[in-house]
Length: 86
Image 1 (tube, one colour):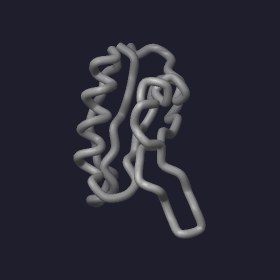
Image 2: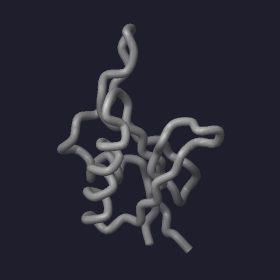
Image 3: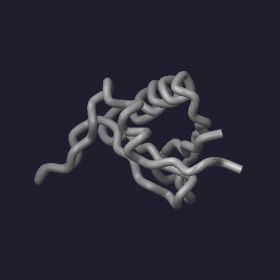
Image 4: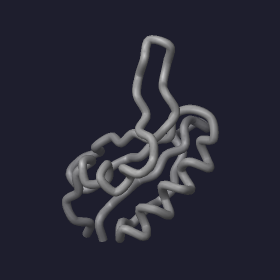
């Protein structure tokens, strides 16, 4: 069973990459995290190069010891990563 994980832990592991921010014109390119219960965090890439960005984050998080599963929202929606602690 996966252990408890916090979005702030994943944020710290990705701090070398640009963080996405919302402005009045839309999202600035980069990553953002979303807590998904106590045992999972989701990582999204906003802006161009979504798949390339997610691939970079996946490799970085796996090197940091996280379990990473690429996923896509139902109906062909946004790609994302599901992050857990083994």
